[in-house]
Image (cartoon, rainbow, N blue to C red; front, side):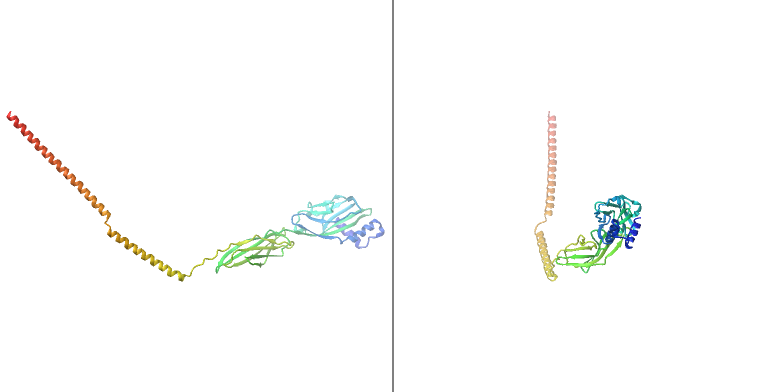
Length: 351
């Protein structure tokens, strides 16, 4: 087992069993002793990406991989990868790392895929040489891996908005999701035309039980005076692992229109009263003038009625005259006829 390799071999070193008179084996053993714990470095990788665990073994003697046993383990407990005499040996690999590693032989670097927050910690690589007398440790390196996750851009949302004594009171919340590690701080910035003010707030945080990522938020109530306009509010997040601050989009408060100038009511009332009086007087004059004109002019409707009555009487008179003429003509004709008959009778008698 690689754990046995590490514990047994380094126990031999601590017991002083490396001797320079032992030839190559003794020299390699001394090299391991000198290098043990001396080579270490820190590396950083992003959540759900790939992390590099370097070994930096130079192999200056060009030892064949078939003579080497190489493995990585986490804090002397969990084996991530083992290359035994040039062949991968997955039997000793811990289940949580199976299928998640790849070995770059050119750079002597182990790549750990699909990084999780739980993968943070101290890792060690060991290189052993398979000699005539067994395995001899020739190189060891420690590396500390840290995992970071970028927080989402802070987002401002309105909780409530009310008016009090002509001032506007707005309650805002700002949140940022799924980041790691816990950020340094979070605050609001209020920008006016000629000033910028920072407002600190208590940062609330929660951590996902599975991914271990953080989500944070802050709340704050702003009082905006009625005469204030052109106001922009920003939310700022200061991550732990990043020098650059994360800035939200601005929350803008629309500019208020300038107040209209209203003249003194004491000057308006006399003017209004004077105008009302003038309108009333003009109305009375107009009414009296119109009434006087109506009295001076005859009633046209009465004239039309009188004309119609006269015309009707004329028509009736003409009809009576025509009737009388026709009656008299009939009477005259009757007399003529009677005279003519009498003459004819007389003539007949004389004959």
